[in-house]
Image 1 (cartoon, each protein chain N blue to C red):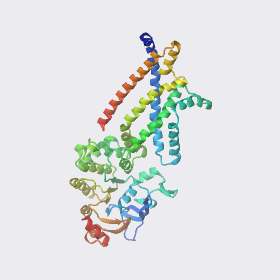
Image 2 (cartoon, one colour):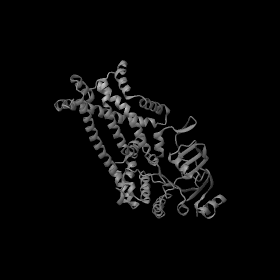
Image 3 (cartoon, each protein chain N blue to C red):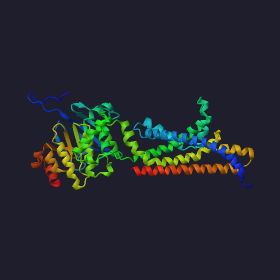
Length: 218
Length: 266
């Protein structure tokens, strides 16, 4: 059974189109993870137990359960409570929520690495607390953790095929659908692998550049 | 609310600061207990003592970097709004607390300049975002202040590009930019190279000629304290051992512990 270039050439446009869904899911999931992760990191730093305890519980719970189950849960269980969301949005929420618990830890490390004196100087200058967070602490906490956040971006990208299970027509789902019509898996799966490889390499290269730039600034 | 006159014919100057019955402990170790201190407006007070004497804690309580466990803090006759909650004092009204503390400036041992901002941006941050000054005006005033300490040329440098002495001068200017009425100095020369100490002390000496600003200086520089301070409070283990005019304290300390400390420090 040889690799058929004609079939591969025929599949490529279909799969490239499907990869747009993969990218959409990744970028959407990452946006959720970046924002929600920061919110979780800030909530966990609260002095009030009523705020930090639920946030910590959520983080522990999500990290201790498989992403696949979370995807199914959001897709099948939420509608029972009247929450109706499009399939791709379900996938984005699941990815975003799952990775938010990891980015929250990354943010935490970044925030804790800012010297305590920066807080004290801000307070001694009577700066309002939100101003200290936004303009003193976060601008120093975030640049060093960009590489770590970038690694999660790539990791999340590689987990998007899980969304095929709820019928998101991303790369793997589309490839499997095509294969089921021809019973040829060699070409579709190879192409899927190559496309993932290409995107991962490009993203890693971009991240490397960002990293170098950030390092040059500080 | 003016301070109550002590005698019929003599109204003392308004107290810039009044600490009464302050208690503070860290993890079971009592640092201050029933600590009281009045500082009249315009005074240059040197707070001295060995390590663990509680002098830095006093400054940090005034600046709001620590909360008292007990007692009252008054600034210019107004009591800071702490209330008791679950056995601790917590700020009752954070915006009012910030407002009342705004006239207080603090300079730290380790400078604590904002590392991601230039010298100029460090200075203009609070005037723009606390006083609401227009940025152009804040920059003009900041440059003038930086110029007054000989740093106008370095306004666009980041803290890591400045020497310790330069950073500390920027930090002093940053505190001045809020037009403070009380300046707290927490061992501001203690982490400087010996040759940089003089340049920072020179700036503080100039500041001390401004009669309107109250200065509380925690220092180990006895020569400087003797030269600049009107009054010396010598502390040991959270207790005031001697509280005297600077000239008396340095020429004729009454308490044997003061004498021992001066002998060691000089």
